[in-house]
Length: 350
Image: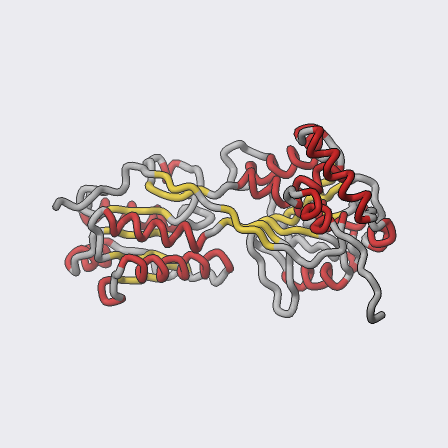
């Protein structure tokens, strides 16, 4: 109704107390992480909440499935047995640590059918509702499941950027655009002005972000498109020794390679280099755009960037609790990746 005063939110409390919303969430949510907040800050938050008349919206919580202090973790991938070298292990570790720190229990949901297909609405029912909210993880998802979850107003946060047409989702993502752009600029600073980009053909959010970062890095370094070769590799078109030799003959001095689930791109590049008698990094430098899968194919210490996977898991839990505590819109958070200088890149001679 016009003129009706809205209820105060955690954002309002944070402004009144002069602290971040994350601090307000820690104080109000409780749990062991709340003990890390200084007593004077905690009192300031509680005083600001009292002055504004802030209170947790119990009705909204009820509409979202009740509050049993249980958070869910749904994986679209098979994650057991969990190996510390597995790509998903740090995500799971971050989610588990943050859930415990905030004083919640964690439920693992896995609804794989006989064919291995994983659907949230297997059987037509959203079984995630036994939890207060859920963190979602995995690459091979069903986007219509996410759209249906959003329609139900069920609180969830995805680990990784995900897009569903017509739906605004909450997620915590690695900044692939910024990390890839910085890798291109790093190569340019080492004298590499003629580059090849070995990309996968899988059209996903992270592949689009890497390509956008590649183009952004070229522009920042002043490298024109005619100095670049882009090769889209799939199972039908693996990189060959002939192709690599063509690149070198054209003056290419560095290759950026996009990692795949099964090491395919990196293995193809290593095999092509060995067959062509090309030495890495003496004859050509190679930079990996992300974390290569940890297998024997990656025994080399690649120049690469790494994802803040544990932090992504922790932040997903924190944002999920914020969604539970306030009737707020979808939230997206991007975290910086870490550039790692390995032995696969060398500076060009002056």
